[in-house]
Image (tube, rainbow, N blue to C red; front, side, top):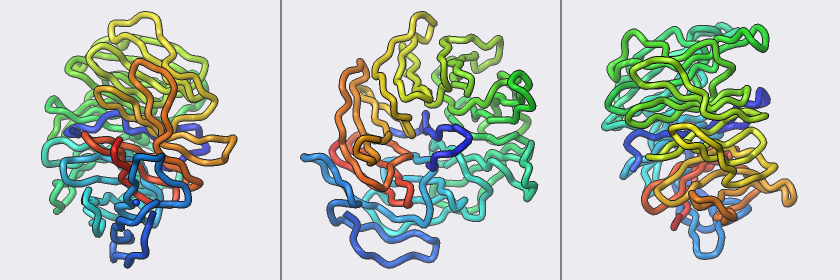
Length: 345
């Protein structure tokens, strides 16, 4: 997940089906490096009581992560989708030669991801696609085409949901959108349009939630209807997560906020001056990657859902960005391409 000069924040908000240093290893044919189990993984390291395992070292940074009970799935800057065993080992390129592979979601026995552009047109435009491949590998399937810079995706039994970052010809003339399509693909449905760069997406049983570059936290019923603005902020709304009662969102200025699903006053759970690069949650805590300008290092941190003071779990000069969790561990990818498992979480 690489930081972008455009101000877009790459965050995995939803993973459908989600439930220690680097040693010398041989490079694989798919561009990865076999996993190692030596500690610590990088020039930084885990906090006391934690162990970090470098599962793989890719040639470029991880963009998005999804985790199953046995494997980690990664879209990378080299436009490939990798499968990496949680026990470590050789990364398998399930697909390669993609075009700006972006968001990723895991649902059932299928991995879904986005190709921001699928043509050689340097100006981009409406040529993005939604893709899928079995978790065991095989032929990939193009589910939807004709999208304008698709950026983040969420999947459940009701379908595919994604945001198109779109393009803006002026501050008020933009082509960003929130979209829906059947799991098997087909003609997409526009749930919201004329948006300023929606950058992340989350879903629950009823609604789709997203944030925009102009500071709006929004929702719309999955079945369609009039979008509702839940909150407005003075900077971009980058990461969006949801549970049974609240929507949680990270701002471009580094604050972590909470807003009731039904609407109402927003609460600051943590106020920071550092951008959050990746954000996920479990039943008790948020986990996120950010940077510490004072020490010039990247950090992986944990924060109780109710707010408080973050706990640093890992730090290092190889900035961590993409992040995911399961029942026992935190997984993150760094700018150099290291994919790390940190336990306990």
